[in-house]
Structure formats: C-alpha cells, structure tokens
Image (cartoon, helix red, strand yellow):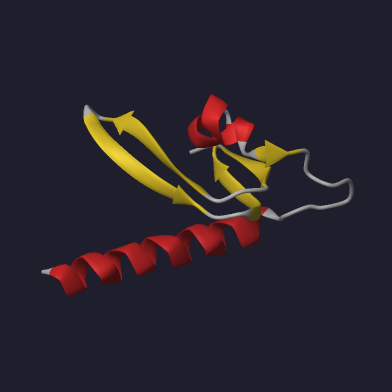
Length: 81
C-alpha cells in the first residue's frame, strides 16, 4: 500500500467507502504518513498544509508506526468482544 507524508493542521474524521462499507478514519493533526487514498482526498487536503522543507520520515519509521496503529486497533477490537 502506497503512502504519502502529509502535514495535517487540524484533526478531523474522514468517512470513505472501502469494499462497499463506510469507514470512518480519525486523522490527528501533525506531520504523518497516510495511505495515498486518504492523503489525496479533497477533505484531507483541505485540512493540510505543505510539509515543511527538510522533514522526512524513513520507510522503517512509517512501517513501525503502521504496525503500532494496527496492533492498537486489534487490541481495541479484542477488548470489545
């Protein structure tokens, strides 16, 4: 899955359709790597600014952050069951 570095200036919730289902994605403010589909959505762009020059995120950092997010979501789902 492709991702893109985005500077989100205001937190928001994006509702998108994935595999025929409405999915709500909570996006926090800050510089972060988002899935390309989310990063390029008009609503995300409306809440974003240019990434400051010199700010980078390595693929390893992005993968670790994605894994942590997936683990947290799995733990939350397990707690609900």
